[in-house]
Every structure is written in C-alpha cells, then in structure tokens.
Amino acid sequence: MSGTPFEQLAHLDRRIHEPTRLAILAALSACERADFLFLQGITGLTKGNLSSHLAKLEDAGLVEIEKRFVDKKTQTLARLSRAGREALDSYWREVKALRKNAARWRPAQALPVPAGS
Amino acid sequence: VTRHFGDLQGLRETVPLGIIFIMNGAGIFAGVVSFKIVYLVFAAALGALALASTGFYRRRFGEVERLDARERWEPTLAPHDLARSDAQKRWELALAPHGKRYFGGIEGPPYESRFFRVVEGQPSRSVARSKADRESLIAFLLGLSGCVAAQALAPRYPAQAVEVLCIVFGAALFWRWIRLEMMAAQLYYPVLGVLLLAAIAFHGATVALVPALGQFDGGMVLVEGAWLVAGLLDHWTLEKVLRPAGARRSLFARVREDAEETPWEEMQREETR
Image (cartoon, rainbow over all chains, first blue to last red; front, top):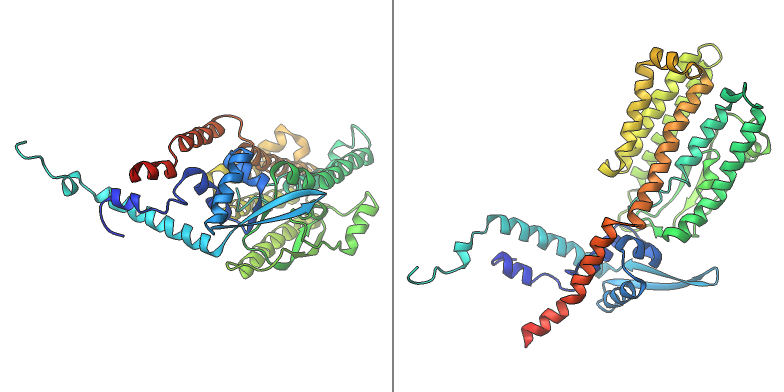
C-alpha cells in the first residue's frame, strides 16, 4: 500500500474497520468458534446490535453462523471463515503499515504551501 | 480472555485444586473439630463446585471453542477432573479407576493423578499439538514430583516437606502465568508464586508467626491458599471483562453510539452525494 496515511486510511476494509465489528472479529480470531452470549459479553453490545453486526459479517462472508439446539434453546455459534481470517490478517498488516507511515509522514509532503504565505 | 477462556474459569479448575490441598491439610484443624467432619465439608464443597461450575460458566459467559482443538490424553489432578468437564459438549471424559477409590472413601491419598481422553473436535489449522502435550506433561511432572517428594519427606522431615511443596507449587504458579502468555492482568500468579517462595526463604519467621505452618498439613494449607486466591482472581478477571459494570461498558457504549451516529455506510453515502 502506498500514498499518504489519509489515503491508506481510506483504503482500509470498511467491513472490518468499524469498532464493534472489529471487536467481534478480533474475539473470533482468538478461538475456533464462540457463542452469542460470549460475544455479547466481550463486546458489550446489545442483542439486537450484535445480531445485526453478525448478519453483516455473515453477508460479507467473513463469519459463518451455526445454530443448534441445546437444552431446548437455540444456541448461535459464530466462527471466523477462512476469508474472514485472511481479511483480518490483511487488515492488521495494513494498519501496521499505516501506523509506520504516519510516524514518518510530514504535512509538507502532502499539503501545498498556499501562494503568498 | 477469548484464547484462555477455559483456563480462566477459576471455579472449574484452580479453586477445586486449592480445595484438594486444604482437604489434605485438614489435619491442621484436628484440634478444633473432627478431622473427618472438616474433610467431608470440603469434599461436599468440592463436589458441589465441580458439578455446578461448568453449567454456571456456560450459562453466565457462554461457550468458546479453543483454536487449538485437538485430541489428547491429558493428565489431571484428582478430583479436579470432575470440574474439568466440557464447555463444548463434545469432550469425552473417562474416569480412571482410582478416581472411584478416591471418592469412595474420605481417607484418600493427598494427591492423585489420572488421565483423561479429551476430544475437542477437529484439529484446526494452528494445532500446536506437541507444544500442548509438552505443557501438560511439564505441569503434571512438576506437581507430581513435588507431591511425591513432600509425601516422602513428611513423616520424618515435615519442615522440608513444606519447603518442597511451596517451592514446587510456587514454581507451578509461575509456569501457569507463562502459559497465560505473561499478561499483566494475571500478574497475581507470579506475585503468589513469590509469596510461596518467600514463605520458604523466611521459613523460620513464618513458622514463628504461624506455628502450624511448620507442619506438613500447614504447608498444604499455605499452598491451597495461594491456588485458591489465584482461582478466585481468575474468576474475577472473567467477571471484570465479560460482565463489565463500569468504565469498560461505558467505553464500548460510547464507541457504539459514535458508530451509530456516523457509521461508515452513512459516511460513504455522504461522500457519494
């Protein structure tokens, strides 16, 4: 990835670069799969919010959802898909590169000095 | 927390392990109440904890399947294996014969080891099988050697037996911290390890302060104290992270509100406009 840190920031994967979705994906990346209750606890999201984010992540192919019955109750399990794991790894690499680039970046490199100033 | 979700379930593993030691050090209370009554009370507490803790954690915090799922024979400490039932419904536990003997009578040996076949689903891509087996083996040998040595020393050299127990289980606390990736949040492990080792370094002063600690039973209680506290702090860590009451929840709530106010989708629509 090249360009200014701002350009790099704009090119980050928007499906992942959102605090709550990133929290969900980061939690799922540390395990094989986790259930809804655990994800709710670790992200601090409401049921509706978590459900909506998981649906978005599933639509994007980053997460696989499995439902099963335990003690006559539905249990929802989420797992990071292979594509999701690769996307998240790639995201962290890009953020790392961005951070490195931002530390080196100087405003003069990007902003033209107004004439007459 | 996600990676070590099972390890941090203190009421399921570490606290029962601590109770085993206090059971075996129950002789320290012999002068106060009947040894057998104390032993039975702790055995009942241990049984209740073992039976209730797995369901409790599943209902309270949910379930997490480990990334390094694998099949292996795992050495466990008696009766901590009963507490070590499965959070994922797919483990198979098989009680070793001497487990029955242990629960059959209250005069069980201070320490027992047994093996369980643990099936944790299909191996995943990052299976560090040999590493996990090595870790289990080291923990097992560490505990076994300490208990066997202490047992052998106890009849003639109670003070030395206490030293062996404290050194081995102090080192085991350090080892557990290393297994938990030396996280600052679990700094209580090395601190408790240091306390156990300090009890040995200043054994004279410790015994002068609490004479019972000079006996083998006293040493058991000392070790138990450290492991019990570690287990409770593990449990507290889970409570703190997964049941946030204050700052952390409000931080996430704030982030969520921000995200709801200006989600990326909305920003993109703005840009398009």
